[in-house]
Amino acid sequence: MDAGTRKTTPIFLSTALAMVISIPFVGCGTFDGTPRGTESLLQVLVPQTSPSEAAEMATDPYSAENRYKGITLLSSADFGGQPIYLELYVDGLNDDDASVRGASVRALGRHGDPEHAPFIIEMLEDSDDFVRLEAARALQRIHTADAIEPLLTLIEEENEPNTDIRAAAADALGQYREKRVVLGLIGALRDSRLAVNNRVQHALMILTGQNFGLDRLAWLDWYNETSDVFTGAQPYTYPIFNRKKKIIEYLPLIPPPPNETTGSPVGMDPVFDS
Image (cartoon, rainbow, N blue to C red; front, side, top):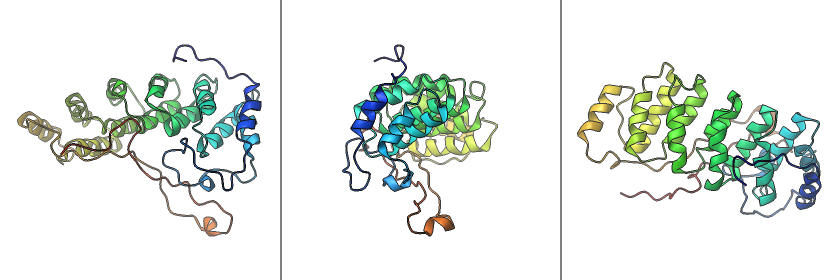
């Protein structure tokens, strides 16, 4: 299926989904579809929601809220990367509701491969901020050279008005050791928002091992005087969500915060040349 031929998920798919995941959460094995960044189903699954109920929610034709919740639950499970679910997430990109599209993009970021990158890249042009933000974040976890130019376009303030999206795009660019990326990031230091400047600076530090702060001219001088700008490059790992426990989360049976563990983007060689 290509990005131009997506179709709406047929209602009968909910039955198939329910059959595939009608296994207990407790003690279920780890499949190849383990969501990137998560450690436990207890981080994300609501105890009162069964697998079959999540499948029905994800394909509910009458409730966007249920589709959002169902896709979020399925994509957070350790079996959420199986082919039938990947098809569901791709189909969800065509949903009329922005929250469903955003959840679907996030799901592909958790479970997708570089072959799914074209679908995610397409969502960088979605009309909704939430969807574009999730697409930029998903591309932090999937490595493909096809994403470079769209991300470079996205970090330009005149192209993307949302600060968080520009910052997320800058983070995603930190995995690409190409000179056009370094130059694009240096240019993005002109951004009017400090949040973007900080993420751009961080991406430049990962790519080069240098730290000239937010001084764009210093970065340019160094770039022009350096034959190999990637000599000091550091390994790239995608940003993660992390917070301390709230008081209630210390109680028995209360899930801990959905903190993540970082890693290298899928499709990227984690070993860097010295």
